[in-house]
Amino acid sequence: MSTPVKKVPIHLQSSQNRLLIRHGQVVNEDGITEEDIYIEDGIIKQIGRNLIIPGGTRTIDARGKYILPGGIDPHTHFEFEFMGAKSVDDFYQGTKAAIAGGTTMIIDFAFPKPGESILDCYYNYRQKADDKVCCDYSLHMCLPQWSEQVKKEMEILCKEHGVNSFKMFMAYSFMLNDAELYSAFEQCQKLGAVAQVHAENGSIIAKNVEKLLANGVTGPEGHELSRPEDIEAEAVNRACVIAKQVNLPIYLVRVSSVSSANAIAERRSSGQRVFGEVEASSIGMSGDPRDPKLVTSPPLRSNSDTSTQLLQLLSSDVLQLVGSDNCTFNKSQKELGKDNFTKIPNGVNGVEDRMSVVWEKGVHAGLIDPSRFVAITSTNAAKLFNLYPRKGYIGVGSDADIVIWNPSATRTISAKTHHQAVDFNIFEGMVCHGVPEYVIVNGRVIVDEGNLKAVQGYGKYIDCPVFPPYVYDPEKVTELKPEKNGTNDEGIQNIRELEKLHF
Ligand code: URP
Ligand code: ZN
Ligand code: ZN
Image (cartoon, rainbow, N blue to C red; front, side):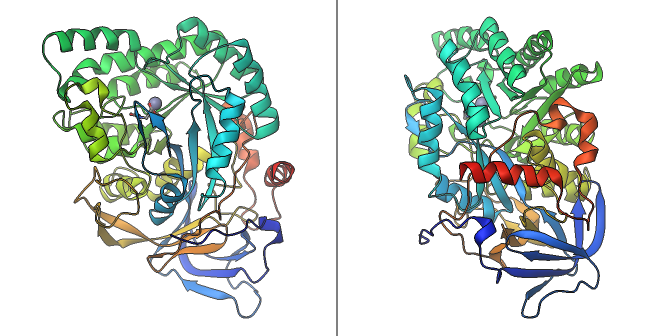
């Protein structure tokens, strides 16, 4: 276990934190250039050739390697109490594992306990996470119920606490009905928040479950049988229809089937602002209906074409980003549902292996190029949650969250070597090309020649401002991009000012 450190705001850190990365291929979403990068006090200060830098600066030679913006995982559930169990990766082990895999920021879902207000839930998550996180993090807020109080507190979270995203569920016992979704969407629209939806038709699932159990289907195969693709696609479409009534852009989490991706494609081609997130698990593997360890919702599809097709849709921007939906339960916890599939705690791992899996199945397989890899694993998450270009971009003024990625090296995924708390790995045995040899988090080398030296509490909470231009005003996005070698961007400064207020 690492020793906790006292938090020192980035702007007060010692100026000895200097680093030069030389000769690498710098990959941004818009192209690849060979340049050197000079980092000081957690910020990228210079990019170019023949940089003039202070003596005594540590130099890393990145010849033959890619230099990528650190990954941003927009979908984790650490220490989540769900379906009678608590997910085993906490904010320390979860973020440590994230860094080991090349992810330098996560956004977790704060989920209120029964009777807890969303404001209290926010405070409780901050308390759980702040002293544990090894990398920066933000929070989405889940809305398992709808009320006037929820509506009021959404505004407080947006205005005072840097929460700019809310997740609504169309399945599970805490799903919202269409009228409640309508009201929640209206409030998101008014606040300029990102509305995220877990889209599956919960009422039809309940009927299917009833029928399956009555017919003696109690094993894990009942999970996917109760949730066919149509049920996902119908809910995706319905969420889009409701969002359209209130002119709200909408973000579908965990798009797991080609049917629902097609529903998104149709909406996007009609001009509606709809965004889709795919999970590393859906890309790395197909589901095995007999295996309770793979139970997650919406299900991993047993159709073996799904992963390739989802990658193609990610490549063509029908879908925008890849998350992990890391929600890990040990084998013994999965056993809770051995006599009834509805009692298997839902969720799988992915926070550590997301980058490798997408590289292997996407870039190494020739389906996506390195720039699109950066877009779907980092930049688009930064844009969606209004953190770009501070995060998700390698440019002057951006946070020095950087991965030096060796595309020639390989590693084999295994629970024996992973850094997560969970006692199995759904990708066990998968050989991945592409290894994060150095991972730099806010200017500090945390993975150093492959060795992980995570520091508990080193990460900090990052405010996400409302009205992300990528979501609400796409025309403005190009204006945000800072000059590669220019001065600090105004957008970055604004975010930093906001953060100081809440530190
Ligand atoms: O199966 C999943 N995805 N578990 C976590 C809860 C959720 O729906 O995100
Ligand atoms: Zn979900
Ligand atoms: Zn989730």
